[in-house]
Amino acid sequence: MAFKLDRLTEDVRRELTDILHTLKDPRIGGLITIVRVDLTNDLSHCKVYVSSLEGIEGAKKAVEGLRSAAGYIRREIGHRVEMRRSPEFTFVADDSIEYSAGIAQKLGQLHERYARQDTEEQESK
Image 1 (tube, rainbow, N blue to C red):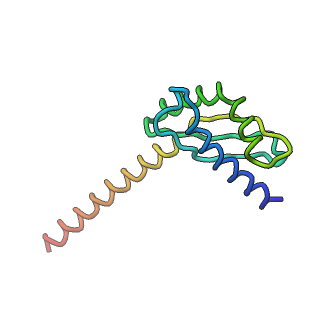
Image 2 (cartoon, rainbow, N blue to C red):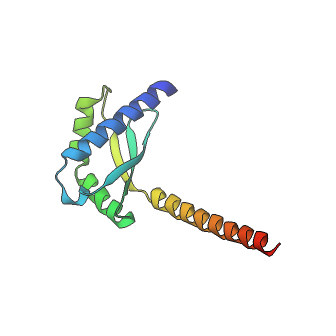
Image 3 (tube, rainbow, N blue to C red):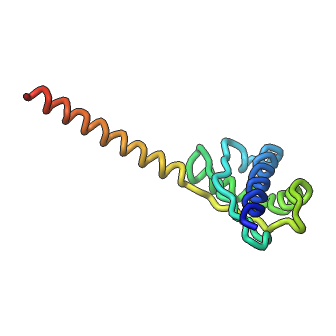
């Protein structure tokens, strides 16, 4: 069952990405990314994590637009993905990309700092 659930989750994610391109709501415009899709074992609920290159505020706007289009999205998923019934969608703004970019930046700063210290130590010898 786990394999089937994983396959269905990927199918839903792929189709959601395709459906996003067809939506005409200006709140959903911009560079929206589906970060993760969680489908329950009984396939009745689907939580979709969305991020935006415009930051968390852009993602929150996109979530508002996606919530208003949830009925359309549910119907389209029902037509495109072979399931007994289409799940209810919950959309969540996700800032994990911003968070990981911040961590990467801090790690880069630490690397530069230690590289400078090593250079200074070698020059003083």
